[in-house]
Length: 247
Image (cartoon, rainbow, N blue to C red; front, side, top):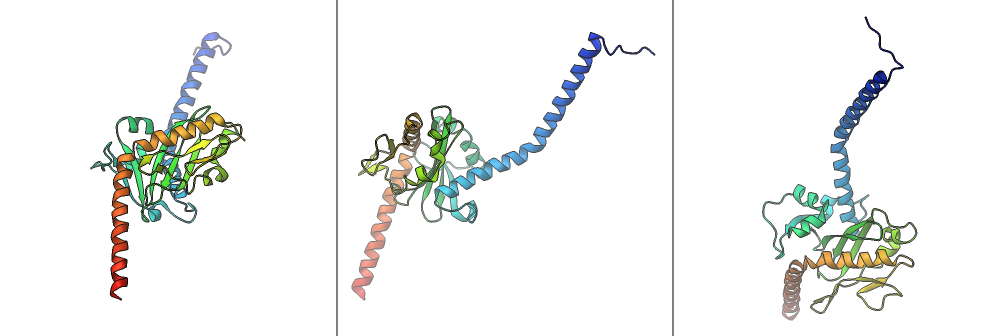
């Protein structure tokens, strides 16, 4: 039987090709076996961020306990029939495409608050997050933001509680006009602004644009619910007044 010359070029090439194929197969098998777990981890992370935006601790409050309903809205602010939770969470993975298609994921909490996903561009890459609004559809209850490559100690500070807490209580409407919330260099001057991060101007500009352009797609929904909530509040006030008069 002929023996391979282990020092020949042919042997080295064949050996290298076989090893590359074996390693590629092993990596593919490993990737496929972990794919389901990775998907579950990504889904759980999204749910935790939504819960956190609503002011709850993800360690003690679950998504199922906090969120009453998840919907996919059309450009008119109406829920699209037939969309499953899987469809809605899948859209969070590519909000740019979802928004371009006129589809807007939204999450409504049991207490009437809503959570809107937002997506934009920072200095070095994508930034994203979730904005929670009070039942008045105007006041910011909370915000969670993340990034893929902003500068540590500067733009990356958008992930800190100090920066995110500054958005709480801010309003996105001035009367009936949508004005959003901006990160202002030099310090906030009104209730539609928060202090920008020193040295992180480009990231802050990205956050400002992200919040404004993302929420704009939800205005039909917010305006409709703002009107409904206002009418409901007036009805409750009228009922309370009648009860007091009858006592």
